[in-house]
Length: 296
Image (cartoon, rainbow, N blue to C red; front, side, top):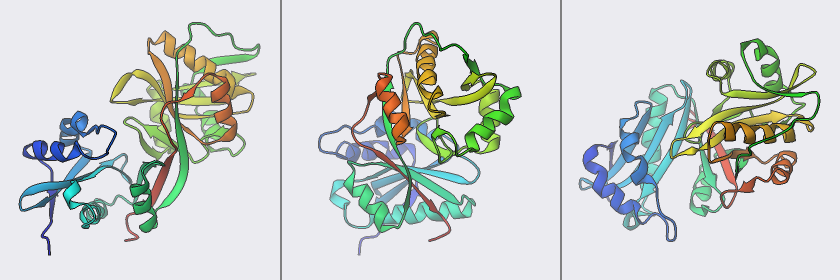
């Protein structure tokens, strides 16, 4: 039986890992070489490597997005070792690490084109909690809001009504209360996080008759600094189209080359995105999986 050891990755693993990552997909390049150094250095993350005879044959990474939530990414296995349980061994090691760290909840996202990962998630009884479709568009230089609507940066004085908007079932958009944090990692939009985002000036909204009726939260993708990225959006039927236009204008003012994000598959919102000249920036739908690390 093959002896597989799992340990934390180190700088000396780089060449071997990047070599087998060149063959992750048939017709699509991998991005591990772009993030390797960052992944090794980031204190909130752990990059695990599976080795056979001291040679790396697989990797997987977990990132602690909060004190109770882990984000899984970067599972790669050398082609010669696929189908031999390497992924499950890495999976087990990460689960153990998270349990010891008292991280209860894990999540990951899987593209609908990735049948292998979708099958793996299903076999492990991991639950899909939301679907997302990435969209992008260009900024616009001018915009005129309808009379009675005001685009504003949400501040501390708006916190109570803003939080009510987030928690209310009577709005459209992100109903699961997830924020796509920097690096495209989903985490629960808890009250402490929301307060912090407001304090950092990352929350924008539409007010009508001095009532907050829509809001969006800026995020970022480390791999693309030119995109004004949205990590959350929610509002009324009437306010969402206005918010999307105003955000395009805000992106222009901030000198971004484009604006976009992962948008929940809310039919009304997707319709407004299409009418607002946003286009699907990636093929397929991304499924967000969630599971309890203590369930085994």
